[in-house]
Image 1 (tube, rainbow, N blue to C red):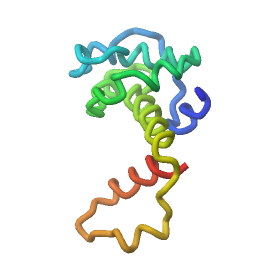
Image 2: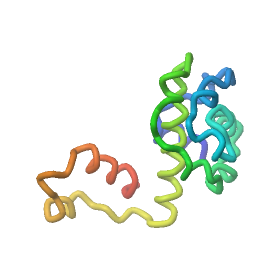
Image 3: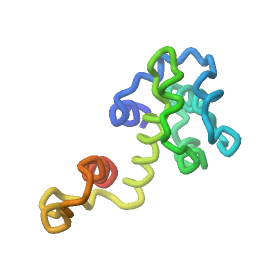
Length: 123
């Protein structure tokens, strides 16, 4: 499962040197049960089941403050998003097909929202 998270995120969590700068800058730090620097370590250690059950997935603001502060480009927010995507996929399966998009497309819809939907709802 760790390999799947690494593949989805495109991040190498093994680069984390556990300096804690990402956690120190996180505005949601006090609300999290697993902090950003711990998150990267847990992916490396294969402790994915704990992450799947973590409240951190839903407390992360996706503000990317941790990404900006990381000296090694580990980008914990992307790892958190990848695990969040795994939870969503487990619960809902793969139920978004490209053929569904034209009928649902709104001219005001940002392209980023469309791509996010594909990442989250398609395996």
